Length: 425
Ligand code: AMP
Ligand code: MG
View (cartoon, rainbow, N blue to C red):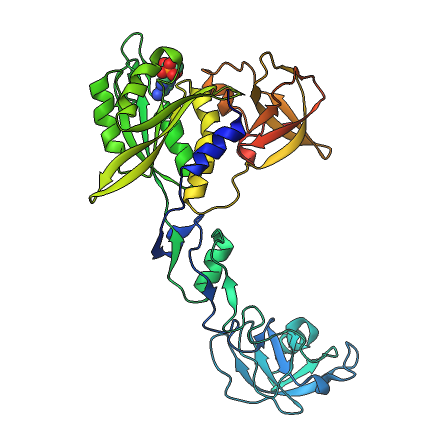
């Protein structure tokens, strides 16, 4: 048996970071920037107002207060997006909107609430004057040219993962397209004579193929593009045909056919195209997995396609995907952090560990009084997919332990942080 970490190490050793592509920024969400981004402009481009108010010379407001207004002459108005055509001179002010460039001569903005504008309006006083009700220090409510991003600076480094904020920063620089590491195409092949396509009637004794869809959804969640190869039958010819279709992908994931009874055939088919090793990994569920590298020719060049063979049981397939396929996809996408987000929680039921493997127990994590609690989601059979649907985390019960008892602290790999799965307390 090999450890989970050893299996991860071997898999990561066989996958490479993919090449960059250029595309519209909104298509890049979650991808890794493949170039440094320097700013061609200052942001903001000019000194401008952070408030709706009056642009003034700070000196003019010396001694102003709510009971001692200082009255200035209003010589104009400037809206966001326009360039002021007047200057603020001593004794004058210009009405200014948020984001509008600061007029020449002004060095502060007094917001409407600190003027008597409302009272003047109520009295229908249309004289071009304004009473200032507070003393303004220089720079009050002024946003300075380049204070967010100065022209020429390095704004985003190669390797950054693009989230909504980074996409906004790219937009603020006027970049409509950018370069990111491309998404891996992951071919997904289910195997088994018992499987039926989900758009077909279900004959007696058969089951629907669910693994293709959980695996493809996991691929999407972690940023890959699934390429669904359908169902391979338990025959050499069927498997051969299907696998051939997966060889132009960046990785092939199969499900089923890795338990001892079935393995010979999958192994025989795959061994003709490359290497394949059946692994028994010190984990539960997900002990039998297979990993290899298939060879194919693309444009006359040899291409090596990593192949991960996940167990057929639906929960084993999902858990093994999280531990093995997820880091491989993240690496191909140029990401550096492969660890699942993990928290410490108190487990609410005991979990036995009978054979020294690392047990991943499906749990629902809740937070009460500043403490996380993890409650197992019922029967933990590796065919019970609904126990996975009820879970938002996998509690990790260490290998070589006898298990944990209720109240013990455990590490929990979070499957989601979303509130959607949390039960009402
Ligand atoms: P295997 O690893 O092929 O021996 O399959 C183990 C168990 O998982 C069997 O009960 C299979 O019926 C089930 N299984 C295999 N593939 C799938 C699939 N694609 N969807 C749902 N269940 C599956
Ligand atoms: Mg099978």
